[in-house]
Length: 171
Image (cartoon, rainbow, N blue to C red):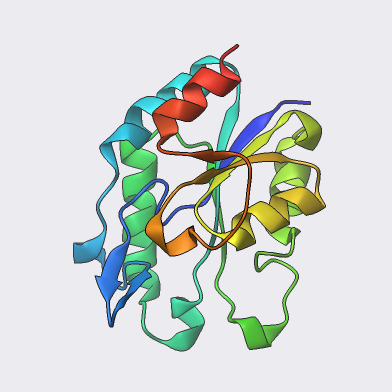
């Protein structure tokens, strides 16, 4: 069994888009920008022997505000720019009541089964409470990227950036 670093996508590996007074996932390919620090970080975690797995809610597909072709183009950029082993998406919305939508742990379980991942030796890096709560349900240690849009969520393992996580898991 191998350990993994699970990554939420938006706000962790790529930039969040601001619109309508809030922070959101990109809704078309032209808005998709990789965070430069993610390039080095995914190379680093891979060099430590971790699988790098993206698990991300993408409800804009079911809402009809993101084209499947744009999502695929964004995914291709992840694979081409970062050291990513696999990507798992939940394309459902809250009312679909699926088991894969975070804060439920379905994407962790799917990835674990496919890749034979040792969850208790793995990490999650997220930017929302849903990321952290999903990780807790499968005993995956997690880090919350500190942002203004998650300030109200109390969590002791807040980090300013991916670089700060490097110092915590590399020892």
